[in-house]
Length: 272
Image (tube, rainbow, N blue to C red):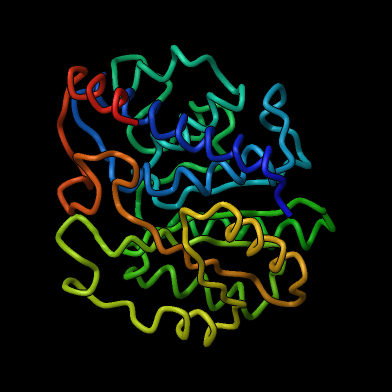
């Protein structure tokens, strides 16, 4: 259960993640905006309420893990990590510059707090399944969370890993699908429909919950429900809006990767 004060704080953090993501890409000149800001509410809830982490000790062995399998949304993860205290905000403005520790796609060797390198679609999800299996083998108490894209869910590797996780009862694994209905080439229905997505995951042995991906109370309740599930991994299908919170990006396929500058950033922040 989330108190009113906690909800207010988490919504504020989600806004901060969106603002910082917007700024980072504005400094870089171009980047993957739409699918980054659509997961801001999920990241706020995970990093500022649910996950057991130590920013001062990023590789703490018993930390909860998050694998952002849709690694092109790394800017939102960077924003969340910076706001959580893993590295100074100023580092965010070096995105994609020479010598940066923050490339456009997540690199665990460079980014404090990043648990897995990602970018090649579906490979991060497989790594998350492996981490969950390792936790079971080693009798560890940590949770593994992962976020996949709906376009990414058209990859066969997603379903190979899903089958393995379901078969091995990895109930220490909770996945989110950022189900915004759009990918680089159009809507997911136009490119290769995922429906019925809930039935697909259920058939692979997963417990499935469908929620509004921008409703932090509903997302938190879904995670509470996942805690009660034994013998199955959980998939939370988060219905989201691509570009959420950014007026010139909301609901647009073109927001997958878009160019804009600091003037547009300042104007947008003034409206938020």
